[in-house]
Image 1 (cartoon, rainbow, N blue to C red):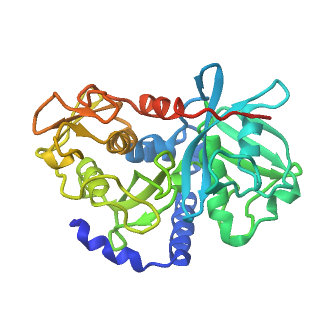
Image 2 (cartoon, one colour; image 1 turned 90 degrees about the horizontal axis):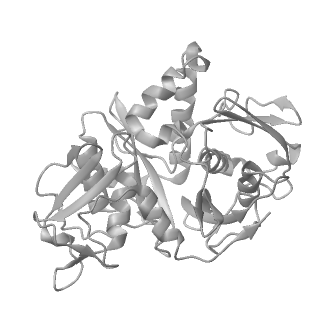
Length: 356
């Protein structure tokens, strides 16, 4: 598939994209086998396709004694963005409650251009965790949201809560009663997982067999707000090469950006060995005139995107085979880097903290 053929997606309206998202999630739950609760077979297959999209990350990172939570907020551009928030929790206010409060309208968050979608009046009455399933018992006021934001609101909540340790699925109750639907036909009765995608784009509308791929971009107003984009592509596409080519090509829409030089290309196929992905680029990857440095933001995009594949743990970058290349911070880019290192470096640059 030539990436140029994706230009038509610019003409798709947000309403059409929302409809495709609902259809995709609907197909997922309709097609789910009855043995889902006994072995999670469908989720295991999806995890193989989309890497960490199918499961949770870690409870929270700790920096300087404070706890860092990853949450997904609505950006002014109309996309959900991934960001880190420092919070202090107490015995009476858990991680689940802290994350829920951060996603509410009017909550104090570190970016003026991002905000939560959950109604401010919503109350998390209590919750339970059974195996990897989190069940939220919410007040009726949780449903006081506009129908047009339901998909993004639920995606924001599910993706944020599944960042917590041992939570892979989120179910909903209103005043103790199970919920099958809110305002749209989206079936939430069996719970939602990351398989619902985030900021979904369809790149293979005519293909019968598709694979889900998660790519990372940036907002045009911040170098710390990551825009995760779920791309549906034909299964015949090599996922590693497609991911790199998509980052180099840049965003399909105009509301998020890639920091790559569009002339940068791989000189050979990506190499994966013992969990380390090695990418050999041409000299156009350099961003300085002396051709000695590669943007640390480029490395962040590559690491975040490639480590979404289940078999990739770290990423090493070389330029025209040379290992004597550094980023603009002074780090050698040939040294394998994990997503935890990237996020830790990003978080250490901030000084915000929120108490709940």
